[in-house]
Amino acid sequence: MDKNLLKQLMELTEEEKSIVQQKQGVIKDIYTSQSNFIIESEKFLRKDKMITVRKHTRFIDFPKHKHNYIEINYVVNGGLKQKVGNDQISLKKGELLFLNQHMEHEIQACDREDIVVNFIIQPPFFQFIFQYLHEENKLTDFLINSLFNHTESGQYLYYKVSDVTEIQDIIGKLLKEEANNSLLSESTMKLYMGLLIIELIKNTDKIQQNEGVLQNQYLVIEALTYIEENYKNGTLNELAEQLHQSVSSLSKNIKKATGYTFKELLQEKRLSKSKNLLETTDLSIKWIIEEVGYDNISYFYRIFKEKYGMTPKAFRSKRLGQKYSN
Image (tube, rainbow, N blue to C red; front, side, top):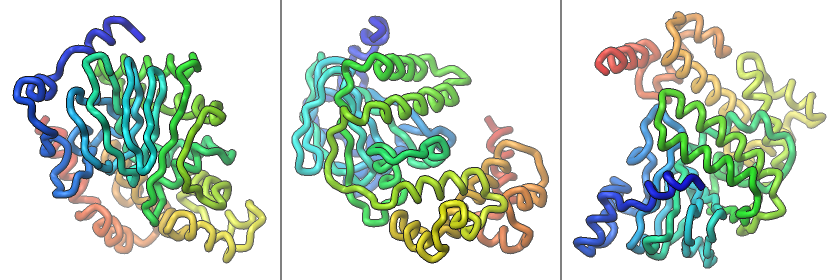
């Protein structure tokens, strides 16, 4: 770990100073706007960002809570003791813990020397990564569960990787990039996070995990990869043929594993792609509609409005207004 970065992380934040001086409990308004303690990514992450890093607040116990995002706890220095579900876990320096958004945990107060950072990651970030993950493993199983778990069961992965140099180096680069906060930081952090996922997959032998696995994860990964690459013209029939599955069997397996039909997953990808094109290009709305696979303009307008609360034209106008007001 870079000594200057560690020194920076050792400094007390304003929240920590307030806790030390006033000896108060967790100020929930900092973390959530809800009555139940679900920490919201919106409190720390801009809407146009998918990844950020936040230092864990020391000197105070955190009561039971969940997140509406995927969190990675990483111990920079010292340790972190917490109860995750029914399991007591003591993270040591260099170890990390994946928590999906359905996992409840409570954390013991950290001392001054206990430096922990939390990676806050929006679940859709991992949808992009699936096109590069073609093998069954514990991490892809965990990510699928986090993205499509309609039963909302909590899951965690505890990685004992303090001795894996490649992982430690990548995390160090992620922390430096967050501290630099340059114009390219968001793109660079996505790249490093992708590399981190690959290294973690290589080290699945170092995982301790709770129960809760998905069946047929291979088929789900292949379906998500297919949709990512063929969202414009892809069909369930073509996918079934490629996987040597019957259409009905594949359809049932996708629905069972994700809670969504193939058609719903395809539509979600098309809408996400159209939203991105509206935000980042000046292409005509008619061209965008055709590009994402629709030929019925009125139908697209209806489902887009259902998803985002406004028409594509209104969405683009709003984004342009925000752009020129900044």
